[in-house]
Length: 220
Length: 196
Image (cartoon, rainbow over all chains, first blue to last red; front, side, top):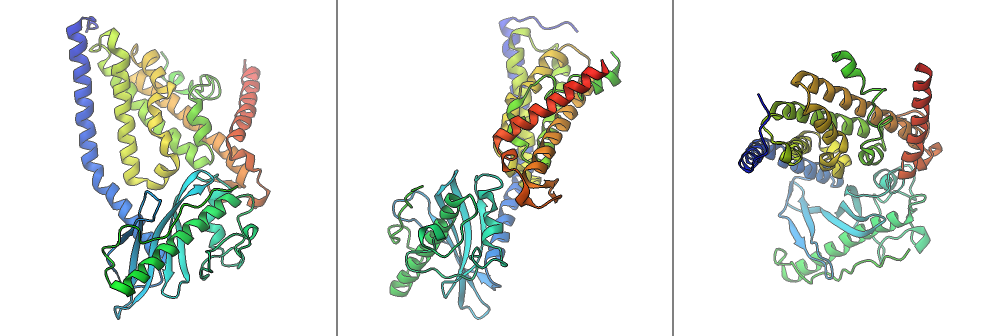
């Protein structure tokens, strides 16, 4: 077959045809993958919850808290034991002060304020340095590094360099600060919800200005 | 053309990374570990083969003046398909390759093969060319990724070879990619010279 000539009509028709077929096939693939994509996201969330919380019977309704001066809300997943007593909460917290900006952490805090577990959900820290957050702060053999089982002192957890008790990741102090900042933010928000809860009992309505949270200063 | 030669040329003689020095952005960006390099290479291979196939199929239906936009639409379609499928079934690889998957669209290897080969050759030789160049690319990325992972973190395909503390961190970071690539190209050039 001879090649089509570059006339205006031919060009319009062939480009239209190409784009039409392309969009139709993309639509089909999108239909086919939409379900599995949503499922993987859900599974990831569930696995993170199971990893940070102690054994629980069921989860309560998600509470969203918008910290003051911050654009994104923090999600709190209360977990209840078999007797309906609240045993711990998983908090999806974040910070913008990582070495490469945004870090998202899921952290479990029990009713005594102790950390029951954590999992870094999203980060873009340097591979080999800051990316070691999960291993470093979860290392049960090194009590100086491990944050699981710690409770939050006044003013929050901080690294040794800032007068705190947590050993920072070697050569990644900024990442370590940011990580602890995310944990502290989770704790502050959770405390505020608890306070409001005991005062008014209206947990679900909290969406704004309940938290005294402020963006961490990004001192180097 | 001899199809076997057509297939093997992508590995050494016309290796897109080591000899033609094309597609440097994903090459340097995604080869922090061997598995990432391999994943990126295979994703690109799929796009390359499919776009070569389609371009050689429709080459006579596309008027010359609009061939580039038409090729780009074809390539972008396959890249988007790869992205969605990967997100659905290989979420961890999708997360670590992230931004580089959509960037396959502008990878000059893919458009280069569509323009320089597939639009002038038969369907069979275009597919074989795509396979050859794609595997050559995947091979190059895996080699580079292995070298960087081994020197940087003491692992190979996530299996620890020596303690991570002795790794040279620079090889995981961007400068290490340039250094490692430079040495590998030197070795390949030496080998090619010997053969000639």
